[in-house]
Amino acid sequence: MKNVKNVMVIDDDEKICWAFKQFLEGEGYNPTIANSAEEGLRRIASEKPDVILLDVGLPGMSGLEALAEIKTHHPWVIVIIITAYDDVETTIEAMRLHAFDFVPKPIDLDVVKGVLDRAFRTQSVRSTLPVETDINSPTEQRGHRLVGKSEQMREIYKLIGVMASNATTVLIEGETGTGKDLVARAIHVGSERRDQPFVPVDCGALPDELLESELFGYEAGAFTGAKAQGKPGRFELADGGTIFLDEVANMSPALQVKLLRTLQTQEIERLGGTQTLQVDVRVIAATNQELGEMVKLGEFRADLYYRFKRISLHLPPLRERQEDIPLLVAHFLQLIQDELGKPIRGISEEGMKLIQNYAWPGNVRELENCLRSAATLSRSDVILPDDLPQEIHIGHSPTTPDSSQLETSLKSVLRGITKTAIAEGNQQLYDDVVALLDKALIELALDECLDNHSKTAELLGISRTTLIKKIKQHGDDK
Image: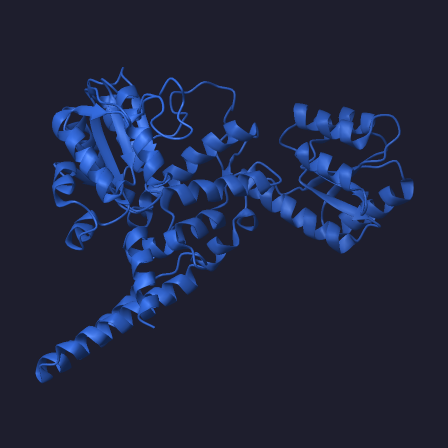
């Protein structure tokens, strides 16, 4: 491994150059001095600097112009800009041109040392990574797709193959962010309907009135604001293909009845219409809720649930398939560098350890967002631990609390109360304490989730509708 650390200083101030030379030699670096941007650019090929300290205010070619040239012809070189504290515009432009960092004037050598240490740590990580990928090269592997070689994912691939071979209704279950939409699309692409429309609908994003008109369409004058010519619904648009109903647990009972009829008859009626339209649509539904539990509570129709569950598939959370994380990281970094137009060589070993030790409550989607944030903020083509969000270092998500300990404690208390109630034959005691515990659990979950109803419902494993009912009920009990 290369031991010599070459640093080039490009500055027209001879005193600053002399001071940098003394400092760099004292710290064990091999310095090269250039007094203009033009001289520095000429000498890069021969001197092969790892890091360049580049002053912005140079005679002739400016530091920013030189930075653009360096990054075009020598993209592996790390460039640290020297600029004034209050020169905000220059600092922003330098970062846009992929400068690694900047050293403010007046120069503090301790700051310089810290920035250089980080720059050479980045170079050290680079040496352990594969050769840089050409972001302009075409590849069949681009785009969002299912990624993973774990045993759980191999089973998922088998089930997708089975489901693609027929046109039966499918239910995909799994936590938020596990990739239910990708599975639905994979089933469609693998089926005989692949050349027909794939129409996704987020049932949790629209109120019932709008969702009904989106699914089934409407005739002219069906309601205030309706288009004069009416509008076809998603079922009509998906005719011959597949409709993907995401988060079906959010549907109202009335809409569930209408959907069930459509599944049974393959017929629809537009809002405000009298004509029955025949459609040929395969339905793939998805949910992050426990529909079976909602059926028991009377919150979801049993007949619709069993219609959905003819074939079901459960997507495992990311924490249960950690061996897939490196593959997902490589996949997302490839996508992200395409989006940013910026080469991303990889992530340091320490950064990867942090990622693999994190619980990922938001699953694959959270991992992708984390990497996108880190890649955007990274000042080089390598992601270091400092680039990762704070919660990754802490090891848990501050907005998605773990309820396992709370659940265990409550079960223990409830078990004791049950024994006492049974022994005394006191049903009222049992009912009162269960209601009290239910109220306490909801209040605690709301507090932990900062009163976000969707996250609270997800944490408690109930639907958002059920949560709101319970909040109102406990409010009336006061």
